Image (cartoon, rainbow, N blue to C red; front, side, top):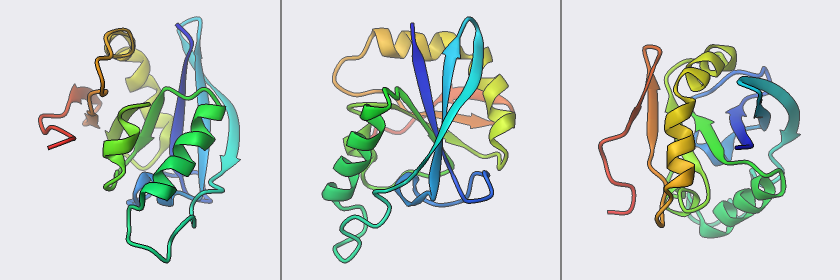
Length: 146
């Protein structure tokens, strides 16, 4: 299965304690032949969409969904997600990370890729939220749409 990841990073290429939609840019990675390789960097052109409205606006969430669907992304990786996680988990697998360096996450994702494959294959309305902490990826306990 062709899997693409979008890492939410700052201008220094590091994860930052910001909501996914507030990232400066996204690093796009692709799984090919049991390797996750960097594909491209894209500027978050939707970062300031509807920022005069309430935080976590649906309009901003939909703009980011469109931006990443255009790149055929399946998995979103970030230290935080905001209210729009309820929108995005219908389209992408969200993964919360506690590390700052994206390079440290690649090996963990690869090690647990079967869980991502299973989640993509068994989608039934909304994707499960995963957490990566201390080098291990686990499903989150909380429900997203409650």
